[in-house]
Image 1: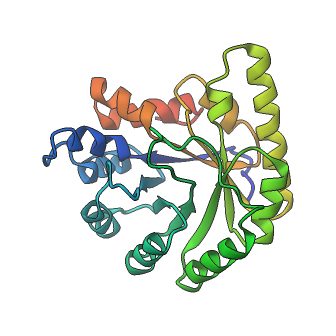
Image 2: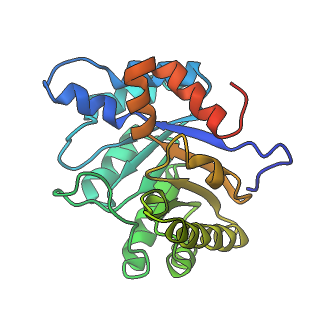
Length: 247
């Protein structure tokens, strides 16, 4: 898929950090399900959640309720473990995004190592595809990883934008941006859908959505942080405006 002449890029809102605040007190509020409803009302195109092995934020119950209540699309980020594959096959999100996961990390630190795990990932992707679940692989902006993603049968790649977002100098940002552009072009040429995410905020998102091959971005922390100040609906509308869309 390639952007149409209108240049519209889909916005996925990740509600993990709403659950992070809830889990700080192991209580019931704030509710990521309620946040997802408000994000959809504000015009987002999909809801993204990461069910981690240690259940540090999103819980199995959240996933089950979101599968029943999300009106747009539900994207489940998860590690490619047997436990998570079984959960995905039971719940059947619209898309599964396979991500690397380490218990000690604060957030996902890098892309999936696809080239070194091709046989295993092929089996996982086939299982999910057979259940009518689209599979995206979260990869660094590395052409070799993008090509490996195509060889294992991924429907899409989500390009890790973290190094671009965290760049300390203009030169560093330009270098990282160039890597994203190249990876997106290669993925598109290989007929995979191109998504981007990690570290994107109200200031740096515009340049990423201007890359023609990128049809979707997933954004969580910056939207949830803004929502603490102005509410989820306004935070989502402001992000859509920052992306260059109507509010």
